[in-house]
Image (tube, rainbow, N blue to C red; front, side, top):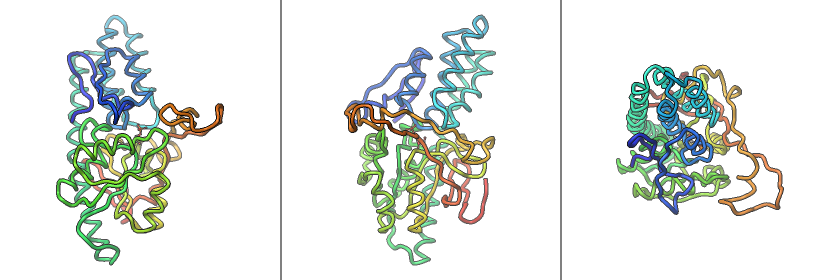
Length: 341
Ligand code: MRU
């Protein structure tokens, strides 16, 4: 299922804020509406917001002809670029399309289509490469006497499926490929408070692919790993720094600590477009703070007294020393074997 695309001069996307109860397609015809959609997470996930940003620049060129209204075009582009700070894909894809669209809007739209197609191909490649790695890791673990059995139990966080990357996704593409190969025993998504991307979106995608799964509360993840409840942890990424430190959904770091303590492989799956060589380490990554309301309520229902102060970092950093490997669309980097980016 393609969850985001350019259709008849506008961006169409599945509204992820409504899932899983309602499957509704949003038609976005203005830059202001796109920025609002990115900010409220109607479209979310690093590759998906990269593609949305690319199409947003094409939209900006339609609304503000760069030949006659260059300042309007530049302001619109800047508003898209800064809609969310942590995932590098958004700024990167906006920067890639903007100069082309400024010179020739039709060429800008063609470049946005190319970005969409690159992400689609990357998802397929990551699925295959990631499934190959997981199978190899299971052979290594069996040889070390750490596990037996052919099928794999995969713990994961947030949503890294087609919703997050137009089609198939990153970590969830690996789960899907394992399932298609008959190698998936079960997926164990954690619910991912505060916005429940694991509980609402990943379960929805797993159900649609017919993959066996059980949903966990966030705090059950590390404990289950300590009891041998999963064979591998697979996560996506919003930005991978040059040294391999990885920004991803808040809760990823706790899973990495739990996995390291239990001797379970912890694998990051992300396209090359999420690697940021300009960011030296995780210390240099800006973490989005989404304010207290999402913490003090669940789906609009208050779960704390009115006015409760709250802290809401949307992402965390997993240091490279806790990451077994990074799988991209082009390579597998075994950090556990001393390989580097
Ligand atoms: O706040 P979100 O839902 O946009 O966060 C998304 C994630 O953290 C994903 O794991 C990441 O973008 C990789 S998606 C393929």
